[in-house]
Image (cartoon, rainbow, N blue to C red; front, top):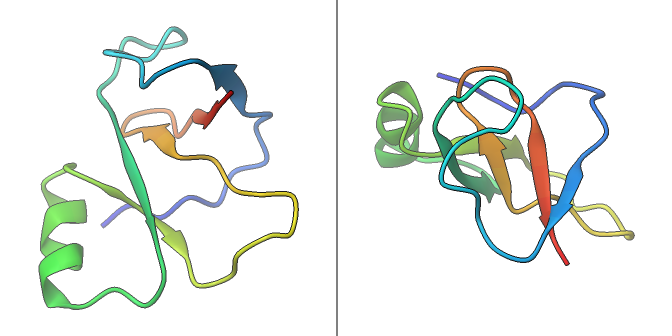
Length: 75
């Protein structure tokens, strides 16, 4: 299971990247909130990245790379 926990500065994009510009990895949706068994399984299969239970006032990134954890914000 992968959960976002890095301090990398998010990249601002107009739409979800097909692949990560830093490492070429798969970019998937970040899911926030308390995950259930299905979301844990999806994270294990690298279909989503778990973003945690805290929402920040300034907003949160929408997507992340499954490999290097680079985050992407929608413009």
